[in-house]
Length: 325
Ligand code: HEC
Ligand code: HEC
Ligand code: HEC
Image (tube, rainbow, N blue to C red; front, side):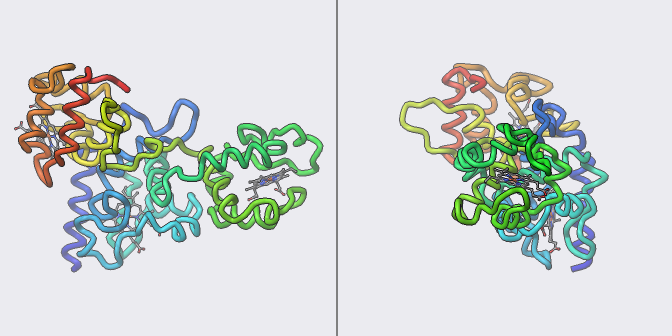
């Protein structure tokens, strides 16, 4: 068992060296100053799926060999019990005597936050965030402000300033359970919301409060499975095509020196193609290398071939002009 851990660590290190600097194209922080779970998703596919599994269930290919098992990110009780700062420490420093490696040397702080908020959102995606927004605007904005900065219309008349939810340092020291408790019990001069909001509504508003810290990956879409599009609707790059590459290709096709220089991490890079040739000819799937190779199963080079639906999605997207949609 010892030997195996050691091997895994070496493998992890090797992957790190091979893929450092991987997200400069998308960037771990969005232009509005939040962490990007989409950039986190790319990092997650590269570094974490091998143990934590594609959907975060703790069931990656190496999980069987590990004791304790990799954390299950779909377990929201585990997530809700931790502050983001605690999870940051775990990812940064690893967990001694377990298979969880330290990532501090390989990932920048911003990259760690980005991957953290991606795995954070695997427990329930962005479910509840839209409902939470309405609850927030109706009940909380008057003090906490429309965009959560603590500057609502009656904020100045209060003896204590309302919390600023865009202050990441503040939010990262509260677990979801901490937020739930304060919202339930109140904190003078904030009233208790126990009577006005049921438990589901309190969790929904928390999901919205977290969205001040990060921008969700692809709204409503988590990883590999192609969405069911209504008949006749052409695939969208962001919703349908990119998730296929993220789940099946970026663990090789990303980083500083990917195979043949081909990085399948975003629209710009996909269209740029490899060092040798474009891999997509808009409107002509039959002449597009990426379709040819996934169709006959040469790519992915290792692992299961893409499903028929996935190959068809790539075909349809190219046939429709390979748009950035
Ligand atoms: C080589 C296997 C392996 C890899 C790769 C790995 N992990 Fe882990 N991870 C584990 C194991 C095992 C645990 C459970 C440790 C424990 O039980 O204390 C764990 C636990 C965690 C936890 C703690 C969850 C909690 O709240 O207790 C987080 C967060 C985490 N991993 C994030 C990541 C991220 C992010 C990555 C990729 C950057 C990653 N891990 C890559 C094996 C791995
Ligand atoms: C009457 C004004 C007011 C309203 C309305 C209000 N709050 Fe507050 N809230 C405050 C004030 C003031 C604080 C800071 C209290 C303190 O630090 O002592 C606060 C703090 C908080 C905190 C942070 C507590 C902590 O320190 O961890 C959360 C979370 C919170 N409010 C959520 C909400 C939610 C959710 C709603 C709507 C359902 C809401 N608030 C509505 C005034 C308000
Ligand atoms: C296990 C690593 C790995 C995975 C996963 C992988 N590839 Fe590759 N890919 C390679 C290697 C290595 C090459 C170079 C092969 C060669 O030159 O013979 C390559 C080459 C390619 C090329 C040809 C580029 C050129 O200019 O010759 C395309 C297109 C491609 N891959 C697409 C994909 C797609 C699409 C996926 C996901 C569905 C994928 N790959 C998954 C390793 C991988």
